[in-house]
Image 1 (tube, rainbow, N blue to C red):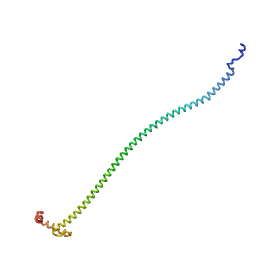
Image 2: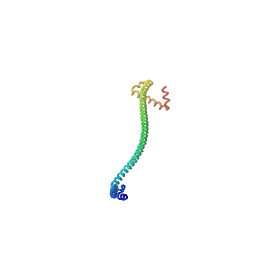
Image 3: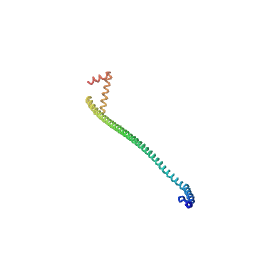
Image 4: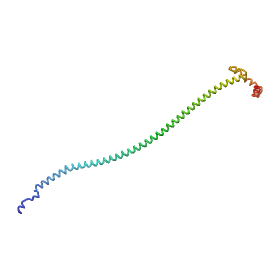
Length: 188
């Protein structure tokens, strides 16, 4: 059996030819994998990693942009509130100014109406005074005519009487030297 055993091959060990062909085939497969497949896998992994990292970077950029937009919105909101307050204050001031202008115009109009009324009153007063002077003059002429004893209704007569009276007054003043006392004595 020993002899038989020496001529029989071990079933667990493959023949040397198959081992050599298997090693060559394995080497070729490894070579093809290293040369073509591994770089392709590397390229796919790199692209995927870049896409993931780019997505993260884009997300961070978008988040930063969103924060900036939020800050800008808050700044604009604060500016709008400030501007609204300024507009409101300006409107109040303008309203106050308009009220003051209206009051000034009303005061001016009131002063103008009062002045016009005073002018009209003065004109009416002057007209009444002129009318009363005319009436008083007529009454004085009529009374003087009764005192002198002549009718002074005619203008020429009135002037003549007045001139004659003034001449007599001058004569009396010149002869007496005292003036008014002689006239007073003659009137009695």
